[in-house]
Image (cartoon, rainbow, N blue to C red; front, side):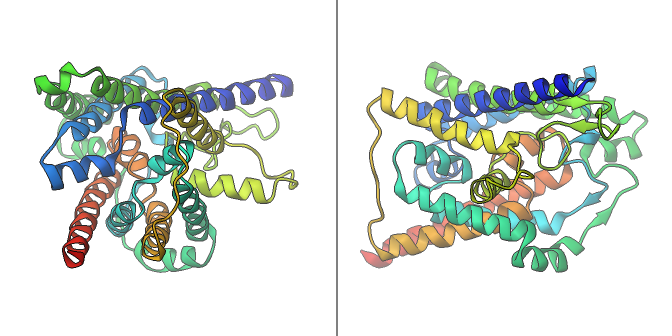
Length: 372
């Protein structure tokens, strides 16, 4: 591959990621898709509609990723989530504080970007503070704490720390066959559970949310893991995944990308700071959300209700930034993207996020009762 062809492919990867971000932002603004909102609806009203949206999206992504892996379009062992270390404590601690934080901040990282596009200045503040906290946990003071504490606790595996690899160690099947079988079982179970409710299936909004988000996450896997895969870089002669911050195939996620976006803006004149799929996706989500909000005439400027409201949102932003990096993803990054790879760490992170969000909602309800 020539340098000119490499540059052209890099631009294609970035524009593709930007388009995925636009679609994701538009769909979530239009449908109200939100993991935190799904948990809130169940806890406060017993309504499972938005959780079924999430289940449908997760099921589609898991089945789609299994198909990509089985056909060789994407290699599960070369994704951001592939590791021989099962970092269960990092996922548990990071996921729990992320889940609690997204309740305090009125939404997870992706919902924050969508709300920024809808005119929320509250969410703009959350986005900035989240990005600072996330970058500190990637490379700063909380990164030192993270690597010295929870990251040290892990279970070393002979192979990948994933459900298929573990199944292949105890059953007479190969890891790829186990991956396909497990993905079919879990993915189809999620889809059937979501679509079995007639009331849910009758509303096009629900189907758009589940199918649209699932397709966006799956499309990002294809863009970073297949389209952007270069077997031999013309300059380094090494295998490369173009425009990813990790140098590996990355799916749709938002905590670290928000941090890298702030870093890119602040050090724009530094030629070593290059655009990545995560950065352009963040911009795409905001613009896609804004376009739909303006078209539907729902765009509204929104500020804080007082110092208490500000304090809770700041605390939530810090918890999401620290927790999202520690858990290696947000409610989309681990909750849908990560589990699609059947990573054992991702399932722990997802469970911890749901538990943390439930605890956060209980805390908010307790606060409201005290004010009455």
